[in-house]
Length: 187
Image (cartoon, rainbow, N blue to C red; front, side):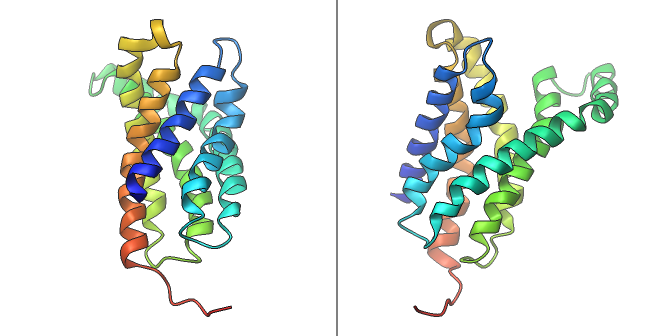
């Protein structure tokens, strides 16, 4: 049930972000995404950990910092992207996702890990899995947009992309909840 709720909440948040992010309004994509996803995931997570409310600011500010680092390192990483483009290793969207979204989602995952580490042994896996989920989110969202962006204005593709991300992180969350609670003092 945790996995299904996690995917559902995250995909609804993603669809909302896609709906609100008009082609000329990047506020929702660049600033609000982390907070919107954080709120949706908090609704699910609060049943499993105390002080889950910290998930919201961790997600929001982690997203903003991840976007900042992604943009800041863009000039440096453009050389690597151009090299990959010249030897045709990956499709263009995947190159960009692989390099840039890995940075964004790794920072996003690191910020969320700051909350999870108090409650779960092996919570450090969250950082790596979240980085991977960002690449998957972009790839799935790209393909979904090719099929649905004309009718859904980005809400369908964004929701599907975030659902793919949530499926990956949700599996790890279930694994952590089912097997790796820390022995916390009561009270």
